[in-house]
Length: 208
Image (tube, rainbow, N blue to C red; front, side):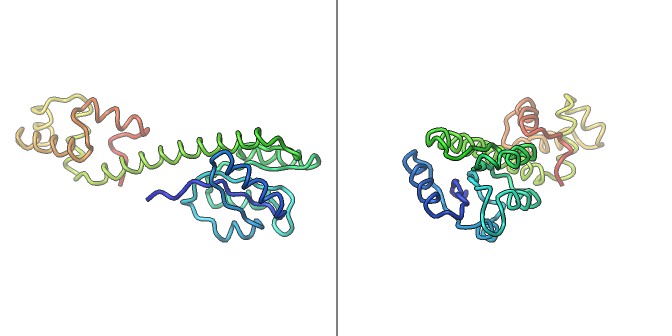
């Protein structure tokens, strides 16, 4: 099962955490609150989905410090920084590193909720694409070496007889391999197969 997408609120001010959780709940956005950057970092896993609403100034590890650590870990959660007026330069620096947005305090409730929803939607799309690519890679990896050789030639537009001659096998064997390739890749034609690989930005020789 896919993990639930959550807006992870990281702020050391309990009143702000509660207010943000209530705001997002009123817009139908599930969330989880964290009292410190350290707490979130200890619980972080690469499978987390949703987004991160992160205060810049906190006791202990700051928001930018947590953001840098998450970048090192390959975290793909879109991050929205909450900033005071004097924190804007730090927020702009984070944007250049890949943060999703920053919103100054006191923030407009609807503006913040809208940006969280945007971030959640974008993350969901990316996760869906990643899952699709992983599925295609798995299918490719299920092919035998001979099936790959046949697939590459089918995608090159070669006739079964030509493939049989090149691989020094019977044409009937080519037909069997071709059918197995289509079955394993869950397609009905060479055109569908080419479109499937192109949609994932893959070439037929990719995969291990």
